[in-house]
Length: 283
Ligand code: PDD
Image 1: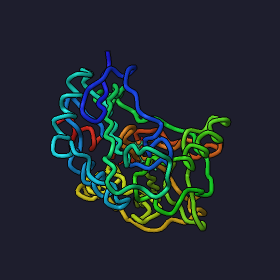
Image 2: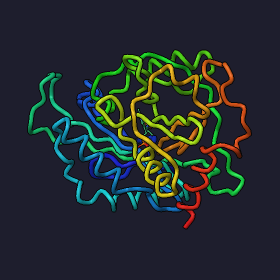
Image 3: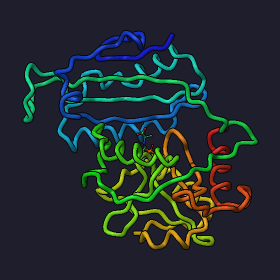
């Protein structure tokens, strides 16, 4: 049996319900976080909660009344759902109102929804190899506040839906010829020994995994730079990775079904990055 939390109570997942008058349902008026938990411990928890708070502030949604107890609610949920590795989803919407009205009532109480499910990962195995994925390239059709982790994800969903028909799992988005990120992850490119990732801006999410890898790699003397990357540079890249809380690091194998990376995985900087990550979470 799996559990979810809504407002003030735990419910069996199949029994949890919400009103269609919730502004999350009517307007996509809400923000969210996704936090991985390894061996019962949420990974980089404080960073995720600070980003959630930032998202709430940016869209002027009040902190949910359960805010001070968030950590203990999550710990209870992890215990109830039992799996040793889990992926935690937290969503806060502006809340439920009596009629559909674009401009919100400032007194509406936010809705807090939290759920977790098993994180199936081989990351803890010494033989771990990150997935190789096949990706597309598309113009970024999303709004210009991608720094807010908003639940309104239609641009991401439409792109992934179109690409999945060709067997593609992620996308390299670009805006004005400059690479932004993926539809569900941040992007890194490797040129020789240099690792490059687009700088934080309103056009990308400041990924917790991205920021973690930037620190981890620079502490280990890798040459890493945050700079704008032109879409034309893709052809020169030796490796391209996507990073996110759920998948950690995925390596691009093919772009639009054209092979770009045929190196054995062991020789890549991406492999070294994932090994450093494994050492960090296993301690
Ligand atoms: N997605 N950019 C986008 C558009 C994302 O949706 C995500 C994560 C990231 C990576 O952020 P982080 O490293 O903090 O997970 C970047 C999550 C996992 C999701 O929507 O399920």
